[in-house]
Each structure stands twice: as structure tokens, then as C-alpha cells.
Image (cartoon, rainbow, N blue to C red; front, side, top):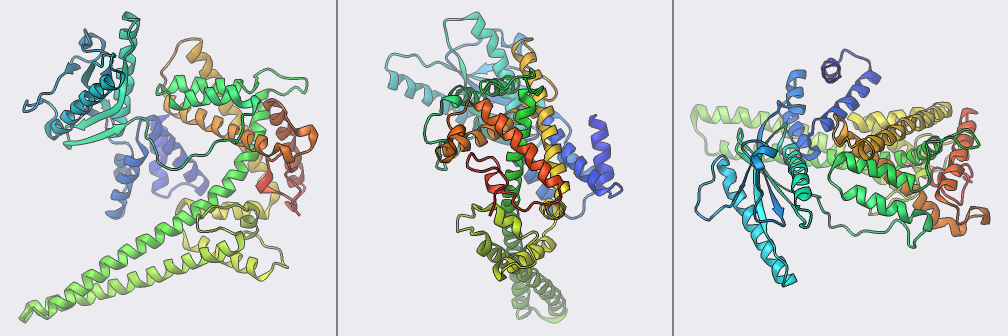
Length: 540
């Protein structure tokens, strides 16, 4: 399978396959990168750097996407003990529990030795702070170093944590009265490049947080608790199994009910409605982000070109003889480049003006949040009697579609085509439901193999945990919205169990599909597709 994806991707990069096949292979390659442990932020940086160097052959890009596995050194800190015995037998022979003393050389870590000492110092200070805080609790710690084979530093760090955590299973079982755990800080070192990566797991943010709902719907309590545990646990297969448990707490079952449909089928249908709504909002955000990136890139390119041209023109005044003529030729060429960059910048600024015209119609404020997704869709296909503001917004969106490139432009064109042919939109929603159905079936299998059969590792476990968490997130998103607004709904839709909400939305999805197959989307209410105060087809 891996070879087929790699070979197909190479052919797609050379432009020898159809457009829809290229898009599918791009998604397959993205999934393969996740399976192989590539870290998104590192991979994005490496691809960006490679593309800046000019055109790439397929084999060059593949070496960036999937570099050869190689040896990395990893260091983690184990809290709760002062010594781990028999490490070499449980992990690799190079594994060692070590102390790092000031001034002592550290073999095998190159320039990473200073980072390793910093990690040891931090762990020691944290243990001392813990003892001081609790007054009577011991705070032993061990710095553990070992080797793993991975494709990048980030993947090595996370794989190293996983290997270390699995080794601790033995020590926890062998000394049941003590608690040991990994500290969140991890250090990875690449001997080939002499680079290090400092990582803390999980990655924490600093933005304000808001709750799913402003009260405690009884129907969600158990699922919220399980989903939280599934989110913070590091072991991927265990986390994926707990994701199914979070859905099961909502009474989603695999058995068929009186209507001959399983809970999985009903949830898949409800999820497809929420996915349609979120795809619309995501496309708006992607468009704004893509335009902002184009403007920033054009500004940087023009700034650099202008500095180069100005510098060479100033150098002409200092040059003499043949050198002056050479500098003058370079200055002329540089000024021509600057003029090209200025034209590109003006085009990018015009795209920014198009965003402003769109915002005037959609009502987007300074925060960039789309609160009226239906008005965003209006700009794709305005009616013949559209008012001037909508007509201007539609022209702006068409200009942005022509200006942008890559996936964002492809999605804009795809949604324009679907909105122009509602039957194709119904097909997309139904296919999305089918994909959710298969993903939910697979999540149930993972739960059985992980929690019943004790199998905690597979080739797809990193993909599985991403999918499981996303399914739970999207489910709780529409349920949280339902319970948040149920007070405004009809009495028969208040205080419903979660599975009844899911069943209600599954029926709504079928009704929406029936109307879309009729060839119209007039009345389609994207903003309230999964709301208790709407039918999904009652836009005035």
C-alpha cells in the first residue's frame, strides 16, 4: 500500500493523472505522512523551504515528505523513582538512566549536550519544588536516554515517549505501591544534523477557553468525561478506544433498532449535516487565510526586491570604470524585478480589497468570524435580482477564486459547482455520511481490539486516534449546540436523550437530501442545519 501511494503520488506530481485522482493521492500521501510519524509543523517548514528553492522533481519532494528513517537520541524524565533497574533488557542496549553533572562530558549528544543538561536541571528543580510544596513527599527522578528510529525530530520525540511509557508498564506492575510517570518535557537529538528539539507534551495554548455549554446537560456528562480522558491520554490506540466509549456513553449502539438502522448509521447521518455546515465555514476561513498569506508574501518579496534595487543604484555612485557598468546592469535588472514585485503586490492588495467587499455582505467583523454562513454561500450563486452589495460580493468572490491557487481555489470552484447543482450537493452529503459510517465502524473495531483483546499498537494507530477524536469533537459540537439552544425549541424537542437528538437529526438529513435531489436549495439553512430551532430548510 505504501509503495502504491508513493508511486501514484510521484505520477501525480509529474501531472500525468486526472485532477480528481491527484486530489485523492494528495490526501493519501497526507495520511501516509501521519502514519509514518511525520510532525505537521516540521513537515510544513521543510516543504516550504524546499519549494522556495525552485521547481522540484517528484523524487526530491518525496525525500522531503518521507525522509529515510534514521537513528535519533531521545531523553525523557521519569518521576517517582531514583533508579530504574534492568533497562537494557527492556529497551535498547544503549538505554541508560543517567545523571548529568556540571562540567561532565555527555557522550553521543554532540551539541545537544547542553540541552540535555538543561533538561536534567529542570527536572531536579521541579522535584525540589514539589518536595517544598508538599513538605513530606519524596520527589525522585531519573533522566532516561535511548535511541529510536524515526523520520524527523518530532516523530522521534513522540515515539520515544511511547517506548518509554510502555517500558514503565513493567515497573508499575513490579512495584505496585509506587507511582511513576513521565514528565511532559522531552528532548530529541539528531546526530546527523547535530540539531535538537525541545518538546512538551501536550502542547498547551494560551487563548481564552469557553465551555461547550453554559450548563450541565445530563445527557452529556459521561461522554464529556470520557472524551476529556481520550484527549489527554498519550497512548494512541487506548485513546481511540476511549473515543468509542465516549460515543457509547451517548447510547450509540452497533445493533439495529426497530427502524432497522444502527446507532452508527444514525450518527453518521447527523455528522454529515454538521460537516456540511463546518465545511462552509472552514472554506470562508481558508479563503481569508490564503489571501492574508498572499499579501504577506507579496509584501516581503517587494520589500526585498526594493532593498536590492535601491542598494545597487546607490552602489553605482561609488563604482568606477568597468565595475560601474556592471553594477548599472545589475541595478537595471534589479529594478525590473522590483517593478514586477510591485505589480504582484498591487494585485494582492486588490485581493484584500475583495475580502473587504465580501465582509460587507457577510457581516464579518474585525475578528474574522463568519456568523452568517448562508450569506457567504449567497455570494457563490446570487439570484438575478440580487441587491448591489450582494452583487459586488459575488464579483469579489469570483475574482478571489481566479487570484488564489492550490487547494483553497480548488475548493472554491468545487463548492461553486455543487451549489449550482443541488443534486451534486446531496451526493456529497450522502458520501460524507458513508465515510463517517465506515470510520465509526472502524472505531468500534479498535475499541474491541484495544480494550478486549489487549492490542495496543497497529500501523494505523496515529491515524485512528486523530479520526476518533475528530468524530467525538464533531458529535459533541452539534449536541452541545442543541442543548445550548433547546429552551427556544418546541416542547417536544426539549430534554431529549442524546441518542434521540441524533435520531432526529438523522431524519432531518434524509429530508434535506430529498429536497436537494429535487434540484433546489432554496430554503436550505446552513447556519441552523443541526439546530433545535430549525428544520434545516426554513431560511426566509
